[in-house]
Image (cartoon, rainbow, N blue to C red):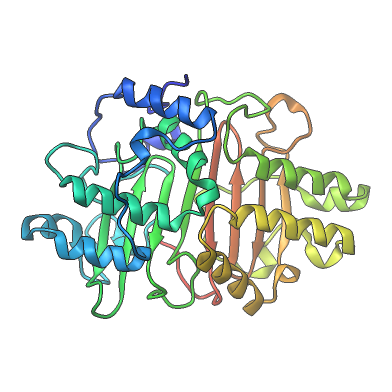
Length: 348
């Protein structure tokens, strides 16, 4: 069984405020066995899962919170954190949006934890639950460990958004309250399956197949196209704000052949596959509004090629208001920022 890779040099540099907790080895063992069989970990199962949409469950959770809990977890829609800026829109690779850890005893009732888990599972496509729980087990020690959330606005009364964060995660549930953006705002996902420095085949990484499919597209390019697509240097992974078209590197997708474009569409479908249908639809609509994939460029980066095997661990699809930055070295970090309006600002 992989041990949780909680110590991470590039992750630990972020504003990570929760304190370490025990690994809970029995639960991890159960989880690992379940994932190996394609089943959900035991600690991922609620006996009677709350029914409803993620948005309706956010309201139920909000209504269940005590005044003390609300004082720590609930904020005005446009709350400005003194150090981190507009807190609702912040994205990072390892952080706690509040210091109230989900799994820490005394922070929440069992019913509240079931609601939090149901909201989380509702955002993720069911076919991905086992893989996401494996990522959480490997990276943190299980669901809720070193994870926190915040609620912005008042659910059921105007705009609201639920934001959950932790190691290798920033995920959102907004009920389409946030205008112009997919996923309710920028998101982050990642995985260090076995260690901080993964092998070139990224064994056990639940997201690596996305890069494998992207690299298949690279092999479909002719020599001239590959020269256009292979870029140096690589931008900082955190630089996922929208840029002017003149600053976007790589091969414009308009220069791809019909079969190459079809494969790029397949890559896009793999990228959005882990999320619920409504979020996938938002991504597609945002892309359509700003010109579709034909308005984007595709870049592969020679920097960070693990094993020097020509399988590019780092790559990026970028358009006027679309950034999907995949950093696969030394382990997977993915920064996502999708909107239908390029003027939307990023808070990272």
